[in-house]
Image 1 (tube, one colour):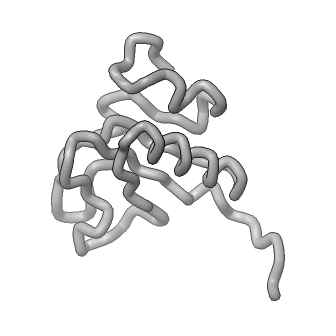
Image 2 (cartoon, one colour):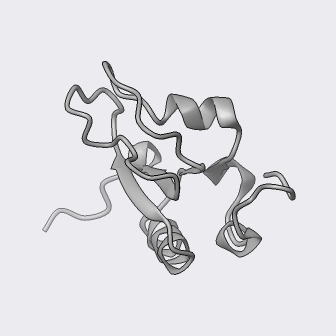
Length: 102
């Protein structure tokens, strides 16, 4: 994570480096679907578990960021494209375990 990034550091301090993508090229990749490009997101959050996901949602929301959910990343509908510049993607592809079937 870059110390000079324009996002408040408190949004990211508690998360591991592999859980937060700030590189503009990677953020641009996550700002597209199969056919369209959205407004570039400022970060991609990649939680490793449900607790981290909840903490990321809380931190980003408290800092005033819109969150866009992304799973497999192959949408044709534009459903995970940002529409404003103060947006982050929360990529749930690392949440890959079934903890309970109820």
